[in-house]
Length: 155
Image (cartoon, rainbow, N blue to C red; front, side, top):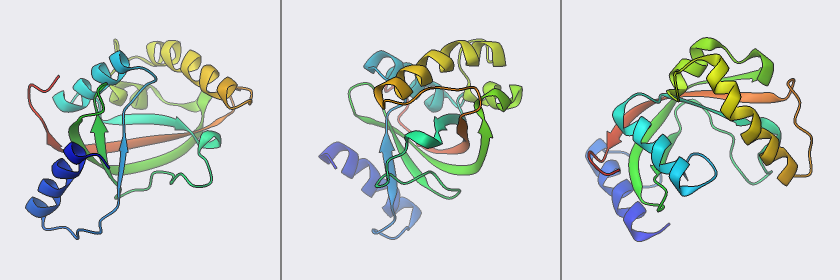
């Protein structure tokens, strides 16, 4: 863990009186720095309170999000901008992602049509990179989270 991330996490752990052994997931949203910045800003602003991932693309060494998990959200320069805690996890087929979940993701006009227009190409590329085939019936992890800490004016 790089020093800036470690310091950000340590400050949070101390403030919240958590165990120094408390596990935390560290990641940026999206597949490029500009997207990571945009989505991290939505988290910092409180507009983005959900995310979706493809269950089949988790590696055996990669933990699948669970309720109660802490997450450090990074910007496009891999700097910490927020800490969230997973509050809900549902596994549904891609084709069954709800309008409500799309709204909670906070992107674009927050409709399911917009959500699909950006997530389908993203998932297709991710599956292709893993030598797998995207399908509307692929299981997705629809995760909701609460914002616990944010760096204001960071992005």
